[in-house]
Length: 250
Image (cartoon, rainbow, N blue to C red; front, side):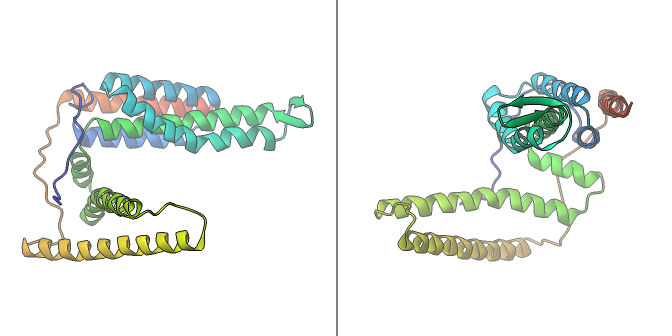
């Protein structure tokens, strides 16, 4: 199996041409500001800003919707729980009381989570991951952390492929997942085989890297060049995040 990266094509857009260093710094500032929001109105505006940037990035709609759905699922428990747990004025529906304060807080958390997801997709979808990580290294992120992230990203897919092959092999032998002692034992054996194969592959890759002169440092061929538009975009997004935080606090 090849270790070469296979990246999803990046659509041409102003955001894909944005220097990865400035884009990473701006997105991190924006996400930090969005995470600090407490009220619904600023969080809703942050979500609208994130969705607008996704439109400008020209990312495939199906790709965006499927991943935003996962962020929505992660934030949904807050929207379902907070209206029934916070005190304050609200509405009585039979034996259940819905708190207005809890409903607003849950909607704020939901919008905030989706807004963070929009900016994460913006960062992932407008540049290959190794370019973004190379930009992080240029921003003084330790090289060891960058390499670990790259290896974890790559081998998550490799282990998924191994698990897919194991599942196909088990199904061709008549195995079906059932809540029985035999089913649990078979799944345990398959998990153990997956971990053993992963450990063996890691040893082989480590030996191959040492044979190729790996010295523990992160090296990249990605070239970065700052243009005036990169700085202007960074300032605009940073100011937008700061304005949202000031609005939220006021």
